[in-house]
Length: 239
Image (cartoon, rainbow, N blue to C red):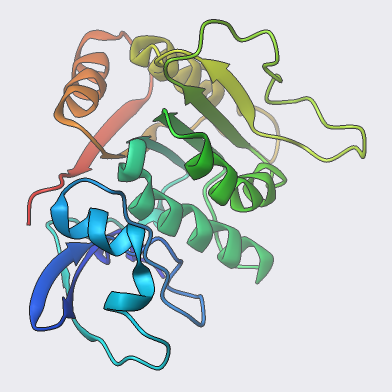
C-alpha cells in the first residue's frame, strides 16, 4: 500500500453507537484487526465482556478511513515511526505493510526505525511477533521503551540475536530521548556509501501518540543538527 498511513482511523458502529478506532493490521492483510485500550466507560465495559457487545457472528458497520495523513511510505528511503502507548496501532499497520511488501519483493525503505514508548507489558507481548518479524528486515531497527521501568539491564542491542540467531527488538527502560533518536537515524542515513549505495537525504517521520510525545519529536527535529532532512507527519487521537 503506497499510501498505507492514510488508513489510520475508522468509525465502528456497536449498537448504533459510533466509536473511532485505529486499524493495526496492514492493508495487505486478509482481515482487519483493531486493538483498543480501556480508556473510558464504554471501552471498559467492552474490555470486561466483549461477547456482550460483539457476539460471534455479529455484523459491524465500518466507515472511513478518516485522518489527515496520506504518506507514500514506500517512496522514501528512510522512515522513522514514533509512537506512544496505544498510539502504536497505526504504526503497526505501517510496519506490517513494510514487512508484507518486502516479503513480496516490493520496494521498501533502506532505513526503517521504529521507536515505541509503552507502559503495558501485555501490549508489547501482543505485538512482539510483528516486531520480531520486522527486525529481520535489512536496515530495520526496533526500539521498545518500557516506561516505568527502573533499569535496562536486560536490554538487547539492535544488532544482537537470541539463542536461535534471530534478530530481536531492542528493549529499553524509560522514555526515549528524541534528540538522540534523530541523531542516530541521521547517522544511519549518512552511513550509506559505496559503489551501489548513496547517502539518504530525506527521512519520513510518522508519529502518533500523546501530545507530549508529538511535541518532543517535533522539537527534536527542529533543534537537532542533522545532514538529512526529516519530514514530519502526525496523527492525533481526536476524531
